[in-house]
Length: 311
Image 1: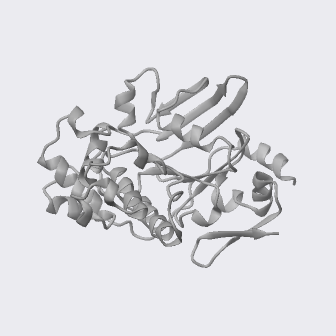
Image 2: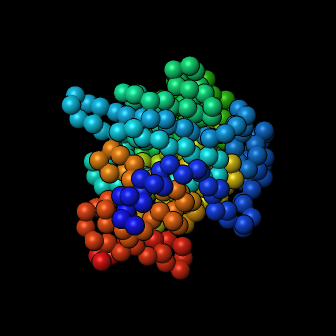
C-alpha cells in the first residue's frame, strides 16, 4: 500500500498497547533517600494523580500570517510511551514541542496535560508537569548560573533562582538529579564554563527535578559532536528507564539519534501528521523516503538503534 494511503488509514486506528520492555526498571529511590529527599518513587515525586494520557493534543493548528505551520494535529502520549517526533526541517516539529510544553498557544485546538485543559488551569501549574529541553536552552540562561541552580529552578519552571524560595532539600534533590546523569561533580560550576555535552546532561538532569508527567526533548543533540551525541542518547535511555510511568518525546531528523527504548513514532511533513503508532510498525523505508523526499532505506541494528542509508 502506498505510504500516504497507509498513513492516512493508520491515523484513525485505535491506540495500541506499547511494546513493553520486560527488563527490571532501575530504582533510583535509594539515591534520593541517602541525600535526605523523601516522598520519592522511582526517582520522582508524584504531586498529582495521573489518569489517562500524560499529554493530549486535539485538532491542534498553528498559523502565522498566511503560513500554515501545523495543520489539525492529533497526538496522545500515555504513561510509559516514549515518542520520536520525526520530520524534515520546517515540518513543524519545534512548534509542536513548544505547544506541548505550553510556551506557545495554538491557533486552534486543545492542549490537555494530565487531564487538565490549557485555558482552564493555571499555566504555571501545568508547566511543572511538563519538562522541556531544547538545543537552544543554553542561550536562555544567565551564564553565571551554577549547574545545580539550573536544575533546581525547574521546581517552579523558572530560569532564575531569585523568583522563588528554595531550601536545602531542593538543593540536595538537584544534586541527586545531576548524579544520575553522571555530572554531580559539576554542581558548583557556572553553566557557561561547561562543554556542550556537559551542558546537555545538566539540562537532562533538570528534566528530572520537578516530577514531570512527560519529558519533551527538542533536538537535544543538535550542538554535540559524535561522542557527545552518543553519551546523550544513552543518558536519555537511562532517563526513560528510570520511571515506568514517565512519558517522553524526542524531536529529531536523524534516525541514528533514536534511543533504544523509544516505543512510538509521530511523523510530520509540512505541518501534517503522516503517520503515528508503534515505532516498529511505522518507521519504514517507505515512510522515511516520503518524509525526506529522497529514497532511503532504514535498518534496525543488533543493538536496537536505527540507521538509514540511500536506497
